[in-house]
Length: 202
Ligand code: VGL
Ligand code: ZN
Image (cartoon, rainbow, N blue to C red):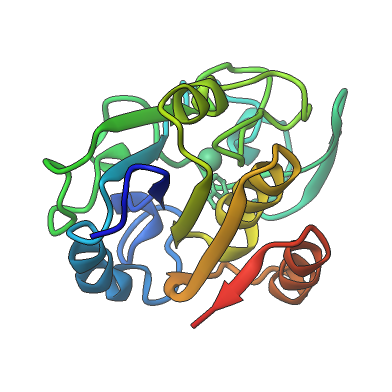
């Protein structure tokens, strides 16, 4: 068991990102047994939950004529338009039934403001609006983070890069993550994580 300076951060292991879900990540559910086992190795455990209102600006359905997975321009920069997913209170937004949630110290929800997406567990996509997770971890004395979950190239990578910028020592266990891989997004995310000083392990 690691001490309380080291936290496990489990990103978005929700039904909509698993096979059969609205934004299914290939083999998204295959990582669950390893994540469940990892929870016994960390004293501090945090789960994140993508949690959008139905009128969320990241949904293609809320942009007339826009196709899912197309790009649009938001006031804060380019934004992928996603299939409607993780709508607050729906089964798609619930954690996968096999994920152990009882051991978690904190469940942090993100993406709940209609006008702005939030891939990262630390900042919304304007890179300025904090979620509060930095303060939670730092006030508990956490310095080191291990990240796992979905999806490697979006919410995991954005969270890992922000965490490294905030001064945490960050490791991503790639074997306990799965990617969406949209137009080379996985290769770019891996390069960006390495450049930010994130350690990638199997
Ligand atoms: C995610 C796209 C949209 C993720 C969330 O969890 O990686 N990706 N919302
Ligand atoms: Zn989302």
